[in-house]
Amino acid sequence: MSMLFYQLIILCSLLVFLVILILNLKEFRSLPEKLPVGDSPFVSVLIPARNEERNIGRCVASLLSQDYDRFELVVLNDGSTDRTGEILKKHAVEVPEGRMRIMQGKPLPEGWHGKAWACDQLGREAKGEILLFTDADTVHMPGSIGRSVAALRQNGGDMLSLTPRQEMESFWEKLVVPLMYFVLFCYLPLRLITTNASTAFCFANGQFIMFTRRMYRLINGHQSVKNDLVEDVWLCKSVKKAGGDVVIYNGIDAVQCRMYRNLGEIWEGFSKNLFAGLGYNTLGLSLLLCMTTAVYILPYFFLYKALTAQVFSLSLFWVPLLQIFVALMSRILLAVRFRQPVTHALLHVISQIMLLGIAANSYYLVRFGKGSQWKGRRYNFSGKGV
Image 1 (cartoon, one colour):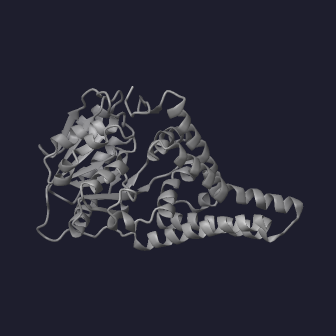
Image 2 (tube, one colour; image 1 turned 90 degrees about the vertical axis):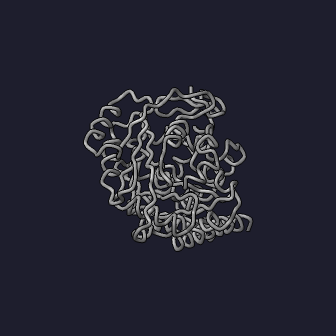
Image 3 (tube, rainbow, N blue to C red; image 1 turned 45 degrees about the vertical axis):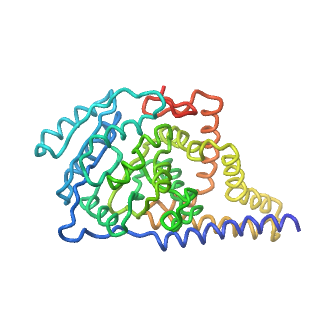
């Protein structure tokens, strides 16, 4: 009887996550099509770039092809040792004077992590009424700026963030990268981000974050998150603490991003962010590991045990089978909505096992290792770049 009770608790948890997901998908809005005529504030599009020769060319080209006229493009070359600077210069000479500026990044000061420092320098040079920070590995559809400005204006928001479409080509990308959406949409009621002032309900995606100039200055820009490796979520917290309004939109038809290209980059990138995203809270990480194991992995163990013993009981076979079905249904719903591979969604248990490994590595790097590494820099517990 105790085993059945345990299995029903797990099933109820999965059903709660499914309900949260369905409500989130129902309420998650697409960007409006365009701005009202005559409402075109000047926008500063700001890109930090460090060793981005694979990506920066197509990112800049997509932004220079926008159907929104009133913007400047400012790119900061953050100490790149590859062809990033060369590619930027090539694009700069091909556009009208004043449309694109290239900045050379200053040395990373103590107490800052690299991206926050690069964005802080960009923010100080920006001339726009609206500031858009976007990553060098993004590609923007022609209407991405105008539609995002329209969304910000229509909601009276102070900060806007999008969930871009994630480009995934390798097996491991398709398996692991969608976990970002799974964790967000199954565990966090998105409505509370915009309707509840509490900083407990925060989300932003650093691939695309837009601020009003007034709010960015009010929170002291990226200096407010100078040692937070997951700076996007903490920027959202800063805006809420300042009394600002945050809006989020489905941006898969406006922006796309290729985050990682192989297993090594995935392992390193997610390891950098996971423990930091939990505020370096060991208890929170432990709860995540326990929940992931109990809810998404152990049902397969019970099902295997029942099949090998040919015991088709309610607690060992039928309820675990239903648990697996509900979990896969959640993953498939997300895959369909965000144009992700459905076939890889069926391998959800493997992605959850990968999550356990990444979480353990993230913890080890901070507590016992030399810190997280990214873009040739290593960060210790405080976020200081080494």
